[in-house]
Image (cartoon, rainbow, N blue to C red; front, side, top):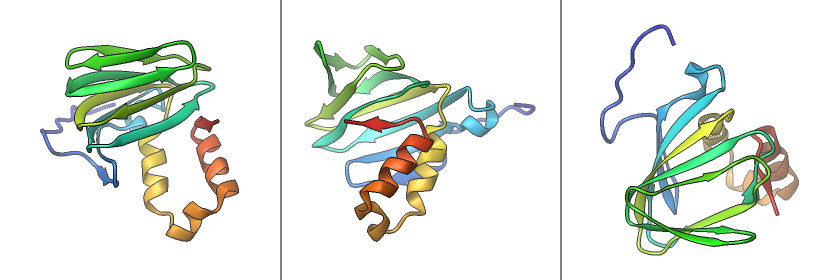
Length: 144
């Protein structure tokens, strides 16, 4: 990054989905794909399905509310101020019944570019499971 960048609260490239409103606070494009920060406003009933990454480390810092992280060997209830990290090859899922807010940090991941790609896809694209698996794999996301 050659110039400083300030992204205020409620700002940043954003993607508003049915369960989550994401604000990109640091784009992977500015860090050669090494780092990405996304602020997630989790809507009530939020659920992130079971997945893992082969390269990316995903760190969740809870800002508001209560988020349940489900690992194969343990379930963790995280509250404001708690940090949960899922290193590569660790299967995980998350849910937030009442809504909340967290900062998700992606090391060696381009999650912001994944969000951008999803925003260009049609409803028909989302019904094509082979296409979804291909897009997910392109951004180091493996479901199962």
